[in-house]
Image (cartoon, rainbow, N blue to C red; front, side, top):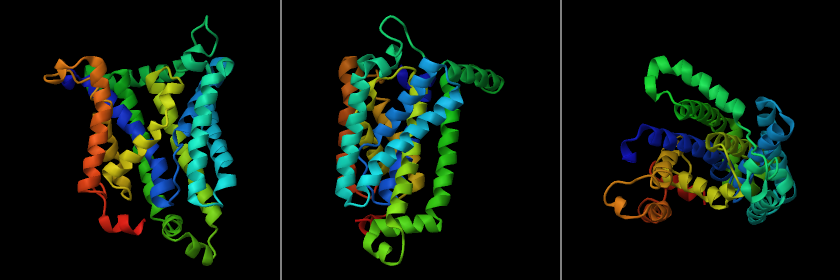
Length: 326
């Protein structure tokens, strides 16, 4: 059964680590600075498509392609933020929703560049199969060989990916922890709670908002790159708007203002969303595999409703902080 399958749990762990990095971006933007970004998935898509395009079309080295992907996410955040951050938060919410959909529809319709509905595998045209992760897979294979004396048969490709993803996630969590405890983080909280008061004492509110939007874009782009390397092939359907709301759900699960609760929320969400599609034990075995895949959406929705009714501040959140953030 999948529930006792080590590769299954390894895959769930990789996805949870990627969700942790993705949600970190929204933590900085929304939980810390009060910026409602509903198009966070666009940063993932831009980073992944830029990286894949450069590797497939121009044979760019992996580090160069990764850096270019993150740069594309940053430039898009500036494109969204420069005209909207001086206005009310409502406008940023509208702009980010529209921006996310614009990126997805461009990826769907610019077939010569993105592969269209087929996705990255069609970037060289309909008669040739495109691949962007050869260098990444070679790196994982080498890392797996290093791990094999310690972990034996467990040292698979996904296990190596698990260690890399969570190492990156923990480093980023540590950096964000230092940042939010610094004077910079305290200014962000003051902007979230009373933007006019922060401006009145001489704080450059626009500058801080732009900084946090760019940082969130970098984290979203990093999550997009790691997801692309994990799944091997991606298409516009992998960047639906619901992806952004999954990141918000992770924040809510752990506690909106609790940085170190994000991994807990990501693991819980990963178990529900990625896990339920593979669960085949009784009584779930009575349901066909297609229906079990949709079961995860029902489970996630039910969990959110129950959590909002019983503990709106999240599992590790503080109700007083929740009220202050309103």
